[in-house]
Structure formats: C-alpha cells, structure tokens
Image (cartoon, rainbow, N blue to C red; front, side, top):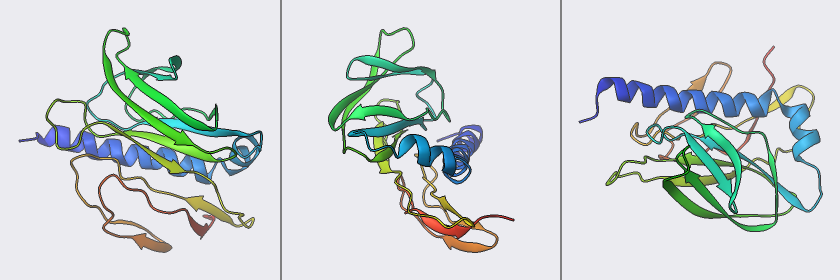
Length: 187
C-alpha cells in the first residue's frame, strides 16, 4: 500500500514536471526557436528526471557525463547529439551503481525531450524507462504558444487536465504525452 504522503509527492512531481515543460515550451519559444532549431545535422535533446524514487542521478550519454546530481523535477538545457542511436545511463551520484540504461534514437535537425519515467524499486509495475517525445514546435502566430503536458506519474492512473479558456485534454494513458496544441497566448 502506498502511503498518502508518497501519493501526494508523486502527484506533485507530475504537476511540477508538466509545469516545467509547459513553461519551457510556452515561455521559452524565442530561445527555443533560436537555440534548438538550428539545422546543423545534429539532434537537440533535453533530459527530464520524473522518477519519484530514483533519487539523485548522474546521466551519461555514450559514456560521457552530461548531467550530475539531477533530482526529480530537473529538466536540462538542450544537448546537441549526432543523429543515430545513443546509450543513456543513469548512475548513482557516487558512480558505483548503474540504475538504468537504455538506447535512444534521434534524428538530425529534430528537437526532443527524453523523460526518465517509472520507478527504480525492484519488482515495480512501472519500471524505469526513457520516454522520448519530439519538441518540434509548429510555426506559431505572434499571439499563440505551444503547450504539451506529459503525464509521468507512475502510480496516479489516468488524469483529466483542464485549463480555463481552452479545451481540456481528457483521460490520457499513463506515461503518455499530448500532441503540441496551438492556443492563444494568455493575456
């Protein structure tokens, strides 16, 4: 049985991650367009830590540390990676324990968020996973912003998200994301 405190922490984590990703995409549109959309033959990938029980982790891509001491809710800046497969490894901060490893494939001139989801505990129903979603933002009008919500809470179940003044996204599957939606900017 999961304690009420852990359930609340998990919900808070999911809301925090969604808020970070929404704000990063909606408010960072100018920086996002300039920095992450360069067509240099590489992919741009940011990493998000959304595992409520994995604790602090160091993140390695192809045996090179790219993030140290990331905690739940952390979202990195975009990293430039060559097109193709890359091995992502999560290690304990002391480097002693490999918590998880997974290959991810990225395409040139594409922007991604790689979200660490699931739980680190042995025997869980939702083991650690890296969910990779495309961040390519459609052309937006001056009065529009792009919004995506990612439901990364491993034990919350389906949720309904609604925000005043635009349509709701209902009943998403666990560990899924919404497509980028065009909406008027808040006034």
